[in-house]
Length: 111
Image (cartoon, rainbow, N blue to C red; front, side, top):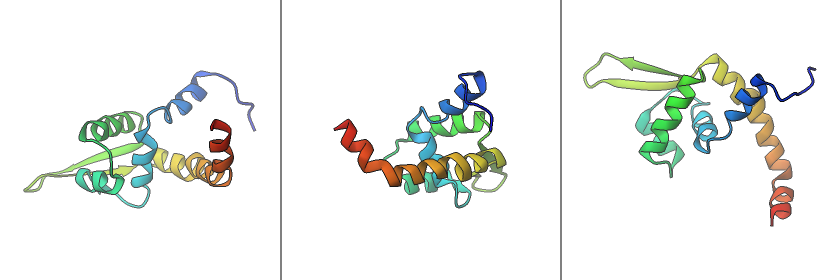
């Protein structure tokens, strides 16, 4: 395995976790594509502005795809791209396991 170094690729990857809502939106999209309102309802507590910003960042980073359908009324869905799926199924799943196993220790240390 390649040694972790502070290079552009590592910074780009860790930046994906600097925005509070981005991992939450990715997790919400992990099961299936969602319309915007479905995403907001699934997440709970996220403002329209925060959801819009998260979707723009995630789309801009190639993690989420936006599909607009020419229907009446218009329909837009968001789904994980293969790159987004690899992030959710890899590092995010591993981080979730770690947080489950060590979350209490972490909170106690911060206490």
